[in-house]
Length: 192
Image (cartoon, rainbow, N blue to C red; front, top):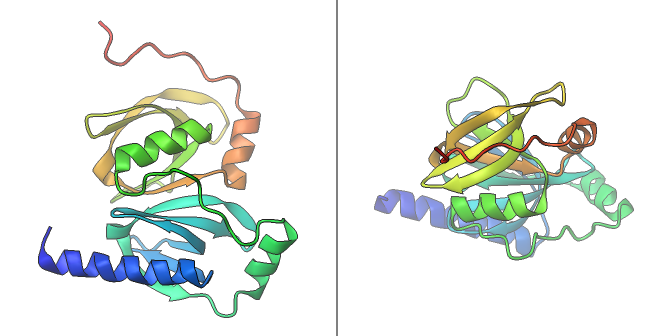
């Protein structure tokens, strides 16, 4: 990593830590133009964790710091705050013991807690890939994909470095989890 990248990432972490300390609603704009709106509840070396506001509480998104283009404060955030208060989620809480420093540990921690994840990938034409993580190893995520029809698809493999955002527990993912049949048991991708 270059000195410029180190300095940029340190500034981003400081700005996000300030948002955490002040419980400020933020709009994070990523390099692919997507916005993430909510309350930052954790920041690590590589990832930040945001309690999503749509403006209601809507799960969490882990966003890769290197993918961030801009950070804006949402002023005033009265609707978002009141929605969190109404749902007894004020102040927004972090997910305990979630590693935001390493991508493999982040994905393993989310897979242990939530049945489905939504993945945004760098340079991908598709909006989001949904599924249940089957294996995280060797810089790769094996994902048992779940289609928009709530039917299980084949295993797919993704390079960890291409993942820019991981969403969990939002209303769309919860709906798919509720509608999906039991997940099929797949043989190990490493078996003979």
